[in-house]
Length: 428
Image (cartoon, rainbow, N blue to C red; front, top):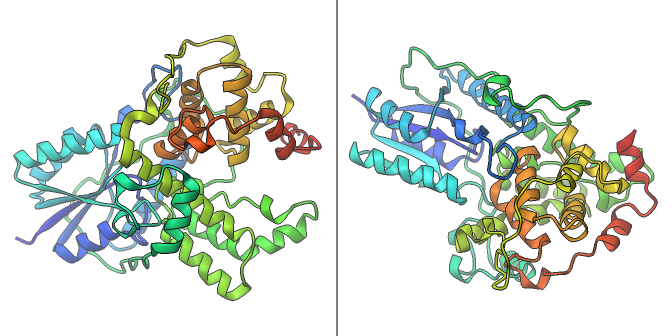
């Protein structure tokens, strides 16, 4: 009997640049690809929110479906299971005589706790859980410093990393693989079953995002090769205002950061350096920075006082001010426009996120924790490190002390929408 490896997909829903998958294929006779819909990802939180809202749940289902279709084209499938990974994976290992389990390591506490539980239970079966790292542009071993010595100041991290680290080439996309024989590959859950009927599709729902690897690659290609056309089509659009909107596919691993980087380099070869290409690299570096900060500091980012030794425990109760902010009913036109965009599309650009966060914390004096939790529910591109890291920074309790108290609401307001045009467009 040949060696079988179970490939546990999490936030890595792609075939391209997937070291875990490439190695599993090379080290086994058959693989068993698995995705587990964990009910805890859709629970209510203590912060008056749900962990995953309707928009991102829809995007997740589409992304898992896309991965399944890609595997089906290769003569196999994706085993879809509902339950807690620490309960279902050991059962699958025993049922299919699995020799090893491969997965990508996460950095936030809840995700790493699940991995630890799975690893402990597999160990009792004398089966190894092998960890891979595939969410960052730079591998940690290629950084010019160990994790414990990574600069807390982002500008220093960026300068040293770009100067001294290298971006590795992508792993090849598999063109064939052998699958474990499975009689029932499972059914993708319905949207309503995952959100438990507690959440409804937002009114005026609209989204530019469709989940899945192919959609992500198509969007990347369009951005890189039609960016100049977008400028020509809108004479009022400045080059620095072109937003890639790649973050949703990056968050679920439908796109690899390295794939994005190297495709951008190809585009630079064809068209020369474009100013808006710089925004891609900057975004990827911020993603890396917060993931490495989570590796360095762990759960501090989830504490209301954060890195502020003099921080006080904030009131985490629900309030009328919080509800008005969530619903886009504060009376501040641009804040309300940005929040309405978030509520109807699941997306908000980075500058707008800074604006509404500063307004919640400094103008309404509501705990940043409640804002971060609401973003966790609503954002289509949510990932723990970037979301909670950014919010801690906005609240002045982040690890980069140079950014503490550097955000002023009125200045942000003038920068983002000096003539009030954005607010009017979103309202329309």
